[in-house]
Amino acid sequence: MIELQRCTDKEQWDEYVLENGGHPLQLWGWGQVKAGHGWVSERVFAYNEDEIVGAAQILIRRLPLPFRSFAYIPRGPLVKDGFTSEFLDAIAALVKRDHHSVSLSIEPDEIDFAVPDNWVRSTNHVLASETILLDLRKSENELLSDMAKKTRQYIRKSDADVTIKPVKNRDGINECLALYEQTSKRAGFNIHDRQYYFDVFMQMQDHSPIYVAYEDSTPVAFLWLAISEKTAYELYGGMNDRGQELRANYALKWHVMKKVKEWGLERYDFGGLVAGGVSTFKQGWSEDTTLFAGSFDKPLSPLYTAWARGLPFAKKTLQNIKRKRS
Image 1 (tube, helix red, strand yellow):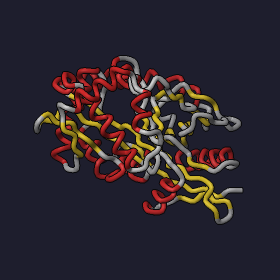
Image 2 (image 1 turned 90 degrees about the vertical axis):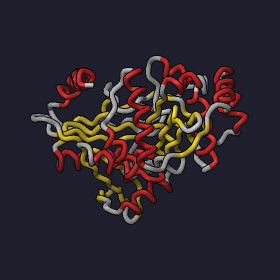
Image 3 (image 1 turned 180 degrees about the vertical axis):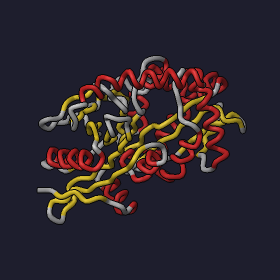
Image 4 (image 1 turned 45 degrees about the vertical axis):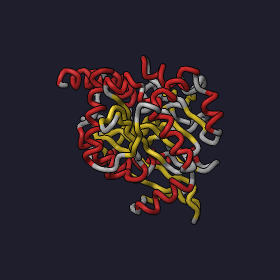
């Protein structure tokens, strides 16, 4: 019988996540970012006697009545074999009791996932299930050989035209966000206000490196990651028109891949595939795509069906409102 204990020690939490191969979205700093923007963060350990057998950073979003709240575990939980069902059911009981959540949703950092009893596969995703996931344990030559011929050509060409440097201050981040705003308008997607990204930088610190491609001293493209001990996960990226002309994102991405490989990371996750040119660009780096297990829900209220059916419509309405305001 496992026992749940809340964790309030950042160092203890991150040490466990990093030592046990956890995803960067399970790090303490990511929970702090979300806590500053409308979510509540809970971190719980599962103990079997004196041994920690599981950990989960849970994000809770308050909802209008009658739904009360929604609980979500991004790319988690982190749990030892044999304890998954018991741990997840214990978390579900916790969020139902303390937050009156309509459901607990998880998106495991796994390709194969045995769905516990009384859980259902969800059609509502927070993170994309399909992505490009590169094995950084391969040699550079092996990674290059997995790429499309044009990708290799564009890497060589753009590498001669840009200089790539890390960004570590607010002025540099502002330059990146200017590029991101241009990218979002061009591609038609919504972004957060600038303070959100400054919070990511402040809370994630060394676990969120940012690299920029410059033509002379002018930034033309950027790439922003979240990293843990094993995994590099793309958070944000973008470029201006000049960056597109130079194909700066090719040299930039390859530079960043080599850098995190040098640091000893084992996986490079492109952050999901979406329709359009962005996916075409990403698929040039490998013909193989990875499909994570997906999203799973534990219904915790008689209102779950109404919540699950209404969520896609609510998301679409909110996106349309944001586009009209931008």
